[in-house]
Image 1: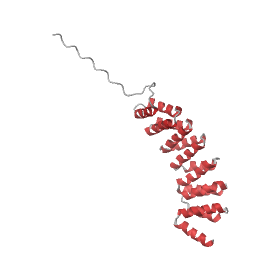
Image 2: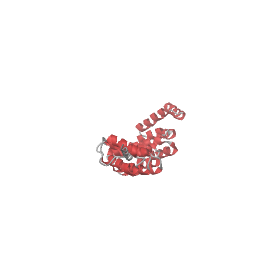
Image 3: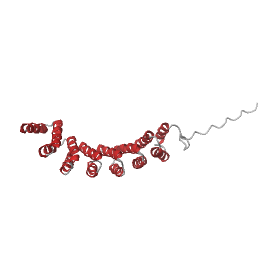
Image 4: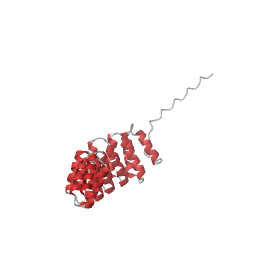
Length: 239
């Protein structure tokens, strides 16, 4: 009886999962797959996500790629988010600026100001929001002082108040002293956000414009602190 034929050799182990350059499934699935690979093959994955963020005609897909980059925690991926914030289409820049606001480290506040320098109004507004989330009072003050667009300027002033603290209250007080009438109302709102009762009382006492004075009184009433209530009772008796 002839000997049995030898068993065929075992097939080679399949290579590690990878998406070749010519593979183009639904972009959402592709982004999901790339997100699962970014920790093991960042060198190839990050440029592919960057291309989606910068070149996709679908803002939602591009923003999703930015989110995956941001969530990876890798330094190269974060640098790519910065690049997209500076070079992407408007909605993608906004998405990238949102993610930049969440990154830890003072260097990203500097990057936000660099983005601001070349941004349109909508991107600037998101930069202001991201700076506010980081309590970057100095940067917000710089925008409040130098911005020419009234909406962006007012938003920076109000956000500065939301950042809170003695520094914000003092900055807003100094701003009010030399502000135009148009800028004074958002400063009053900013002072309210900062719970700056002394500064609001001073405006209520010294402001000659009746509408601005009335705004300060309304904010003191909403503030509702013991000192604000005492002043309001005193002011009502004088009137």
